[in-house]
Length: 440
Ligand SMILES: Cc1cc2nc3c(=O)[nH]c(=O)nc-3n(C[C@H](O)[C@H](O)[C@H](O)COP(=O)(O)OP(=O)(O)OC[C@H]3O[C@@H](n4cnc5c(N)ncnc54)[C@H](O)[C@@H]3O)c2cc1C
Image 1 (cartoon, rainbow, N blue to C red):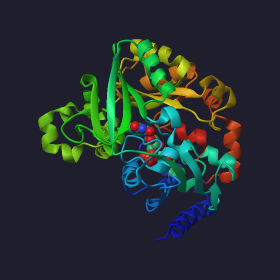
Image 2 (image 1 turned 180 degrees about the horizontal axis):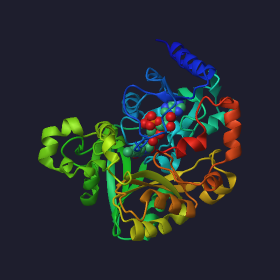
Image 3 (image 1 turned 135 degrees about the vertical axis):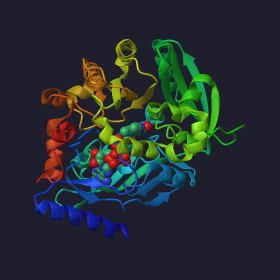
């Protein structure tokens, strides 16, 4: 089927739902969603519009270093195709099944974020289907407000159907260097120094405990002396505790956290045992398998007081050390993944007052799997509250607790309403605030 025919089918489905007064949401038959499943999840009750077939890379222009692709392309396939041309997206989320449309409509961070921000910051143009069922091209020159607001819209404004974005030169291997610091101050200073110097291709960090901060620095190379792999028997995040350097293929570097879904496999400790990995690893490891298993176990979540905390928060760089001291004292769940992130230009969905405090350089701190069973404290709410207090932004991919007053201090209500009027005046897609507060 041609791209145009697929888009027309999506537009028709949206028009039909709108005519029937029914709200819609994007739905993919293949792969998994990376919005954290919640017990009795009420967030996905709208009529599904099938966007599964929108999953092709349409064009890679090696000279112009651009790519045109449909939103359902998973990063693992995109990286294979761009690397074949000596190129890479500016930001590749670590899980193989995350799609380019999901990364724009949701969020994305990675080791090149210290210079490029999120994946959406590399976007040149989007094609979307509006709530009226119209096909609209948006770019910084044409429909600039709609273009800017698609990032972080989580399916509440329009459906992405085609994306054009920039690529950067890449080599086939990455050399990793690990530098250790026993306090957050030294770690933070070293991380900023490397970001300022811009002398590595990738910068991120993993904090294994209050005295174990590891700065991970990556550089492209053509000629590695050896190549490691963490796709089966060995565990990547553990290797960062003991090694001082490593070499990976660039594809494996991009998805180095995929095998364990960061460290969510730890929820079932035998999955980290060598003999178990040898016997069943091929079938149970990998983020798509891990997330599918989580979803299958969804009914059991009802037995837990609350789901484990899985969330990214963006902390203004100036408050990062405060955040870490609080985290060490009151949160105490390790590892904590840390990614420096430059906001190339202010995001229009952040309210101007909040954007001022946030600044243009933030540190993404990602918590993967903190148990949340304490009857007295909801750890998800605690993380949200601390992030708010420090002027940061919490991604909306899991549970949200904001009051409307607090929420609209962070998000720009007028900008969202403007975008809604342009893209979805009759409300074919869910309302932004309601969508994220319907958790049961
Ligand atoms: C366990 C876990 C680990 C993660 N690790 C990382 C990581 O390492 N790096 C990183 O950058 N991010 C990470 N994330 C966050 C992830 O990138 C975001 O949740 C992203 O939005 C997921 O995209 P997806 O392709 O899975 O889309 P989905 O989860 O299916 O959708 C995400 C949102 O985008 C909307 N959407 C999807 N397709 C479209 C479309 N075509 N048009 C309009 N809206 C659409 C959906 O409605 C939904 O609100 C992680 C999330 C989880 C749960």
